[in-house]
Amino acid sequence: MATTNIKRSTSASRLINYAEKRAVQKDGHNIQIDYAKTEFKQVREIFGNSGSTQAYASRLAFSPDEFNPLNEKDQIKVLEIAKEIYSKAYPNQQVALYVHNDTQSLHVHSVIGAINLETGKKMHGNWHEYRERLVKITDKVVKSHGLSVTVPQIRPEKRSMAEIKMKARDQLTWKDQIRNAIDTTMSDARIIDFKSFKDKLTEKAVNVYERGKELTYELTGTKYKARGSKLGDDYKKETIKNELDRRYERQYGTGREPDNAWLNGRGERAQKEQQARRGLKERAERAIRDYEQRTARENSIRNAEPKKSKGKGYGGPSL
Image (cartoon, rainbow, N blue to C red; front, side, top):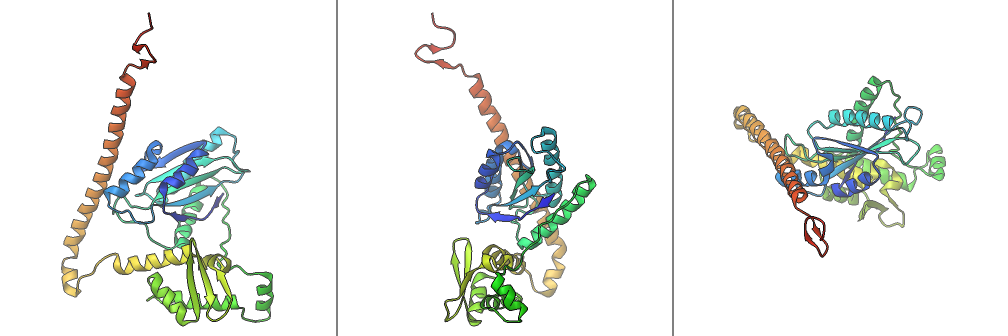
């Protein structure tokens, strides 16, 4: 079994459209799977958290030696294992799960809501941290089911054959100069947003350009430039921005009061915060229930209405 990348997305609906279309089995955690898109949207609206990141996409692939993609019982078993994994990894988040059998191995696509139903806050962090935690939970669950675990290697750096040969001769390549500048910049804890990241690299004679989903790095005064994805996973736009978001959240996500005032009021604040969290979760659950009840009523009314025959009026056979 393999755990692949976990990536953030600006559209939960787009992820669901792709995954649902090819699904042979589906289920959800903290969500009604048939109304997944609507419920993801409702939670975002309830918590007033409508930023760019709506969800995270993840994928679990199972060995064809352990499960047959065409066997329905295997499809159901794979879905049960995936649900166990994701409910442990994200107990307070919405997760939609879809089993695909369009390759040689059964695999499960998951759409993970970015918002924590307990706190109302978004999931922030580093791609590597998310993946490492998910892999650990996956390992534990699949071992309990007697399954094997296959973890693909992460490639923090990508090197051409020419670079490999130069490194063997202890020669520094221009790509290494860029990598070193980025590594030094990101090792500075004061770098917490993209502007400070970009400014610091400029000081180190490296220009940074955003091009869609990519970052392009260029040595100042030269024609040497490379996309982050060509330098390695650690230098991709997604990796850099996730890490900067995590740092910013750590520094500004929770306010602090001065010394004694903060310490003296900590217990009271903690109690109020806990009450607020419970209230947020209750509102989210109530909104979802109301939606389901309203939908059920509307469907019942539609089904009860007599159908109008074309050109014949309502009800019964024509005379």
